[in-house]
Image 1 (cartoon, helix red, strand yellow):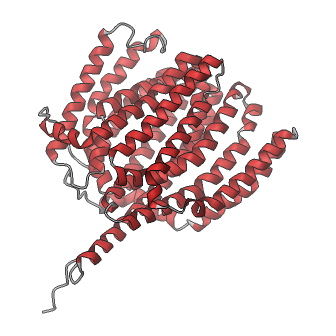
Image 2 (cartoon, rainbow, N blue to C red; image 1 turned 120 degrees about the vertical axis):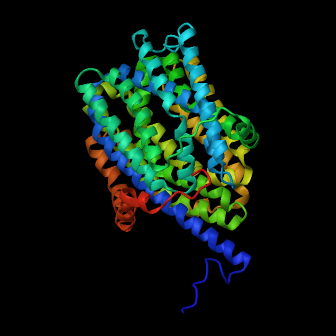
Image 3 (cartoon, rainbow, N blue to C red; image 1 turned 30 degrees about the vertical axis):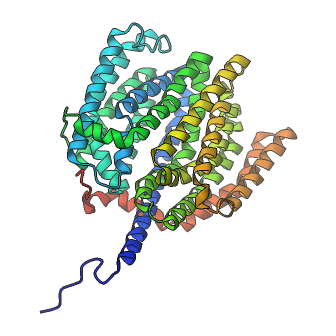
Length: 502
């Protein structure tokens, strides 16, 4: 009879086993980031193919309504979630089934309370005059549809703790594809605003059913004792999430109130352009948050995670920033009604590309080192800066709202730097080449503008080098993309959930 095979870890010292576990976690985290990067690219292909159709078919005010509705529903979503999802994802210990069930029960109760308040408080259903009155009933129906979503939290926590980003990514790609195709169809039928509500309602049911099929957790409990215990550990994340809601969801509503639906629509377009960029490094942030808490015991592992994340995100994001900045002026020539969005989008993309990449790479490290206080400091600073800048712009009679977001992004990056400077990440070494490329392309764009050269000439000249670099990166990663696509197609069947949640 042959000798039994040694179990994993046999013959290793405790330190060696810890090294092996950290190396495996880093490898899985980077693989997850690659999968999420491909997910982002797929989402951008879908959105790019539909966004141009939408901006040709709808008016800025209609896109402004889209921004307001999305912001209102996101506010409801994150207000009821209260940061518990992030807290459970980054816990060192697996959340218990009782915790997951209690959070789902709490979300259900909060959704019912919000729906009742929206029906009984005068003008709440039309967001106190921001949303045209004829759409108030639709908003109530959309909030009611969210009553099916509480179990999503349990399923997502189980998947993200297991770093099963392939399955999550495929689900999200399908959802965005359905939403974008449906919005274009409604726009062709001159029913775009109706389509906004119909697609939001449909996505509530789609994501709930799809997540349940991946991880069949359906228990809901109204015994809130486990929530109280979890809240004691995660009050910082709850506060941070509420602040994030104010920044990302309520701010579009404030823009509509301060500057009107037309400006809100222009900003929504600029924001959508920015999503082409942000989704290229969002994967690094999500994968880093899931892994960083388990790497916190070793500073060297955190430094390696931060450096690899920063380098990888910048090598992709900075060329995209240069391309977007170069080609955006052509929009004013092709679609004059959206010319007001060009400078907004350029400023937002430029700031997001530099400050946003840095923040996305270092935020997981800040969370691992400082805990929820890091999230509170980052989100509160960004929100205060954005809102304060919006007030200043309103009082000054300036409607260039991208300046407010630029101030918030830069301030958040400054906070993250202050929280992580002790880890000594080689930022200059990681960013020198991507920043040099971006500076060269911007110099061509600025020079062409100063010399009044036609955008049709300047744009290709400014885009040559970043396009070449981006193509080179795509070629270098040609083996990564098929591997990620294989995971997207079939990773779920091979990787059962292992977290305590499941």
